[in-house]
View (cartoon, helix red, strand yellow):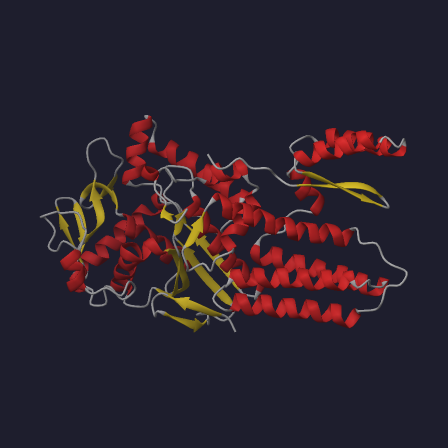
Length: 481
């Protein structure tokens, strides 16, 4: 039984979709004016895994993730770079898609852009004005927060507290400082669309209300995003949508925790701001993805160079296990451990699924992976017969399928993984190995040792086996810049 933590109710609940076996899921995407950073990576990986696990459980999932392609930051950046705002957003949509592909994020079923739904946003504004939930002031349209009696139900805040400590823009034209913009009058030389209130553009919150309702219908099953979106963004979405439609907007609200950099909040001003691009220059993208699985998605995660190194070492363990299994040499004295091999796989699958059923607990799911590796290694060390070995191979292939399908890791063969870590070309390495093999045949052990030590200093370990010499390469890192 899958349980999810619902921000709306503040507790874990059994997951029961609104329509049997179908899940409709909307996740707030990025504002496309710059490269994606580590915070975007976390949210993307979290909701990719939630989606993947729902598919694994047999649900038919429709996954929508939007692009905010009109916004104050976009206008500011396009003016600074002296390029059209559309050119800027199209560029960074492509850059976003490149980063997501590198992180092995499944492409969403639908990727709406805010500017494709302007007419629907205008209609929603008109509906809210007509119902008395919104009002017009000099070309701007504002939402009357006080009229929506359940305002604050997602963030667990009440209006009195919000009024006392509200950090909101001071605008004397608003009836209440908490009222937020549904439609903004465009300033001179800003992009605009023609509306009943003059030239303007949509407010941020209304975009997601419209796109989710149009593409999924309401209510839908899951609305997701980072914890920073709970208030005011998601709170405002609920207020707009439920006031207009007079029914529940979304059933389950799921939010991922913040990313801290070396135990401090990530910020450009502190100089601890990392883009996905910065990280994958130094680490395989699979390392970043693995790192993001090591902490439960609702908890804060502490990003650091050392933690990436630890994640890389964990992946090295997995690929080393697969490499050793592939090259396992059967003993004539091997025993039959078929029943035990079957039990180890059953235990893994049970532990893995139990962890994921508990609000997508990837940290515990990773523990199940390493338990499986430890137990299979223990069995192999006891010397197994042909039948047991073939069973272990079959189970490990299924193990890889489960892990890859749900967590999106183990994307390479061991050979590909270790080759990707090489600091020299593979052809150059093969020549070095051949040179060393010839030196050993000629009993020139001094030269053989010299070649081995030279390669070892580059992070390349040589493994001499009865069938020849193979290698494993581990990356050497200088740090993130």
